[in-house]
Image (cartoon, rainbow, N blue to C red; front, side):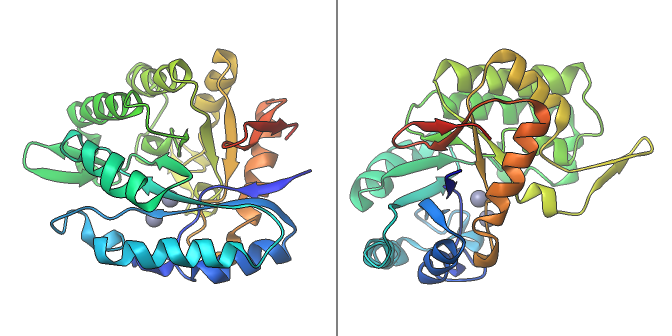
Length: 267
Ligand SMILES: [Zn+2]
Ligand SMILES: [Zn+2]
């Protein structure tokens, strides 16, 4: 079994614990076979600045990843987890991916633009189904830009949705279809499995991953990757292992263990 992870964060994003070096040392100690570091990318003009590095910190991040990568005997890739907003597509392509020489780009859609504000997907206002549809349209448009290596937590909205009703299935199904059309692996997210459980209708479940979504994804033939989304370096590989257990439970027979080389194996 090749232990890998292509989704993890550093203290630069202001909501994670550990440095690039901490992640690489923890991954090495856990027997890692390949690691992708994907901190939240910066945006210009203070946009989303509370939860990410600044543009001025980007070079230091890149240098840290490249330097620390030389200290271990498994490949370490440089990446970013990004929000999509059409106004920042050129910024993502040129100022982030190209300038930094990123090896991979993760699409993590957490925010939706509601006329004047960026709303976080967890904010109860997204119970408003109009915003769910906006979120879906934005995410599908984002996927189609073709700049991504995989799609993080495609079932994130199930953290706030009460049930898998026709609307949830239509919206998350559209995101799933767009990912499949673009040949993009979708992520079983190990972090969601450690978050406070979601309780409704007398059932207790993970906020995400959400079972019905993943059975649906399996039926549609989606490619799957299992990542920890570590916001603490100690979880850098454990979250990947939790994700594999989950993939096995759903019945996937193959997962992507390196989205850059395309390597796959049984979960
Ligand atoms: Zn984060
Ligand atoms: Zn993340």
